[in-house]
Image (cartoon, rainbow, N blue to C red; front, side, top):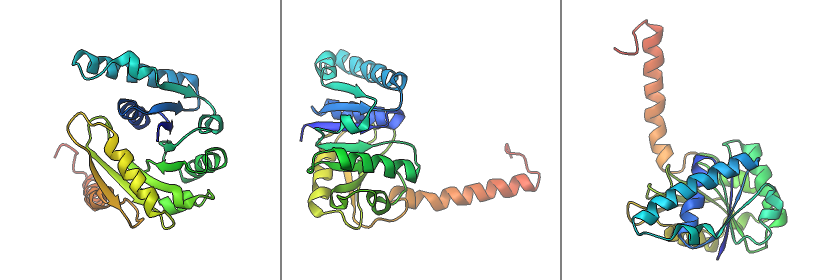
Length: 218
């Protein structure tokens, strides 16, 4: 396992790419425009330079393993592990998974960083559902220790264990990773499933107060 591809390098994807580099993987970042990719490279460079001043790593050595690509089909040709971190849109995710499935090596694992969506449904766009998993990072990825590794209905035990091992290999600046294996594909997985009822209730209270003319400050 040496070649990691991160598709979608907004805030989350950039952090995922950074910790993958720090773990020693060759990383290819993919997004829609070169401007987005350049911004991600700049942010990673800034982060690695800060770590170099603390004696954690050599920034230039680490950055030498980073590449960018605008075409996901070409980017995954030699991928061992693919992490999709695009917008939370089922159709977009399924399109990315389909492209990866058709172009990546047969052994490659395809992981989604979705925080709520069904891994089973996303992976249905592929012919390798046994090698599709969820890999839910928390923001920012270099600092938040928890990663949820989620099985779809067709995910093999081997793929889940690979996901766990990759997750454990990714450094966290606040300590060892805590990896939660989620073996039932349910909306929100663990953390967001627990948090959602409270958030819904607070939104209900806010809406009710505003309807009654109670100001937000009160």
